[in-house]
Every structure is written in structure tokens, then in C-alpha cells.
Amino acid sequence: AQSVTQLGSHVSVSEGALVLLRCNYSSSVPPYLFWYVQYPNQGLQLLLKYTSAATLVKGINGFEAEFKKSETSFHLTKPSAHMRDAAEYFCAVSAPDSGTYKYIFGTGTRLKVLA
Amino acid sequence: NAGVTQTPKFQVLKTGQSMTLQCAQDMNHEYMSWYRQDPGMGLRLIHYSVGAGITDQGEVPNGYNVSRSTTEDFPLRLLSAAPSQTSVYFCASSEDSGTDTQYFGPGTRLTVL
Image 1 (cartoon, each protein chain N blue to C red):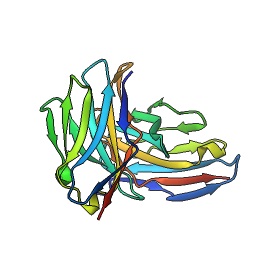
Image 2: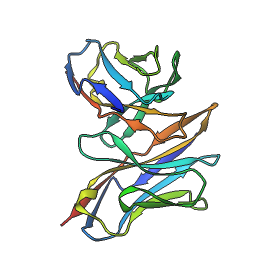
Image 3: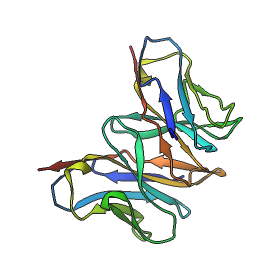
Image 4: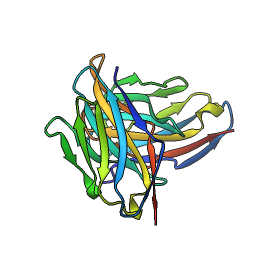
């Protein structure tokens, strides 16, 4: 069965600094990979997704993620953090399990942006 | 196009009470699911449905029932509420199975006393 691990439940960066949120996955077959963002008191919304078309995936709001099969990683980055990026970020993996695809979400990383 | 809607937004129950969390989507999506979100645990799948009349259990199904009589609606029933069910509940839908983008509702914050 697939699994996903997000390293660091809380990450703080200064405004303008690089954002790096880590995600590692485990899957016996090529998975679909996603990053979602959750702003306070809202549901999750998609930032970007990897579906095997290209290893570097660009998403909304300047975020991107690179699929590295050898490292089983799908880290999320943004060159310059904005105050509005403060939110909780979830990595998710989807792969076949007993005949159907099942989503598994990571435990989330809360990003704090310091002025 | 309202997307995924959930009612109520907030609910307080006493132990042993039952209730239904409503979820509806207007995107004609076949796949719908219910998650609960607890601090430090991310989102955990309760039940899901791949189409009208078809439901299956997720990771944490105990204490919850679902049905899918129409494509649009996917209610979640708490049979006998327990304090361990205090959580934020999210409904989500997607065009197909778990390979597609999931669209989430705004959530229901449930407290069981």
C-alpha cells in the first residue's frame, strides 16, 4: 500500500526567502502525486499535480514541485515567500490498491511567513 | 456553479445522539469521499463512492454510515456520536477515481460533548 511522509509539521520562513516543503512517498507502482493548500477555515484546494507527463510541475501562486523517482520525493518549492502563502500544505499520493485508486494524504506542514 | 457544498458549518452534539452531515456537488462528478481532519493527523478517509449506488469503506469507517442514491448527494451519518468523533469533516468530489483533482467543500466542524 502507498504512503506519504511530510517532514516538518511547522516551517517558518522570512518574507522573500525560499520556501521548501518536503514530501516523500512510498508506492509499488508509479503514483499520482499532489500538493494541496488549506487556508484558515477553508477546504483544501489543489496547488499542483504530477501525472508522469513531466518531472517538474508548475502550479498556482508561483509554486512548483519536482518528482524524483530515485529519491521517492516530491518536494514543494517557491523562490520567494509572500505573507499570503501562510497556510497548511498537504502532500497526497494516489496509487492502485485492491483494484481502485486511493488517495493518501500526508499529515500536513503549516507554513508561517515572517515579516 | 456552487462546487461542493456542506451543511451544517458547525454542530454540537451530545454523546449518543445521531445526525447527518450533508454534502452535495453540482459538477456531475462520479467520485465522492468523506474525510476527517484532526490535528497532526492530516486527512483520513472515512468512506467513498465511485458512483450512485456504490460505496466503500476508507481508513476510519467505524461509527459512520453513507449512502449514494444520486450522483449529486453523499450524506454522512453518525449513528451514535462519541467524543472521539469531534473533528472537522470534509466532503470532496472528483471526475474519476483517485487519479483526479479533488474538490473540497468548506467543512463541518463537529463537537461531541
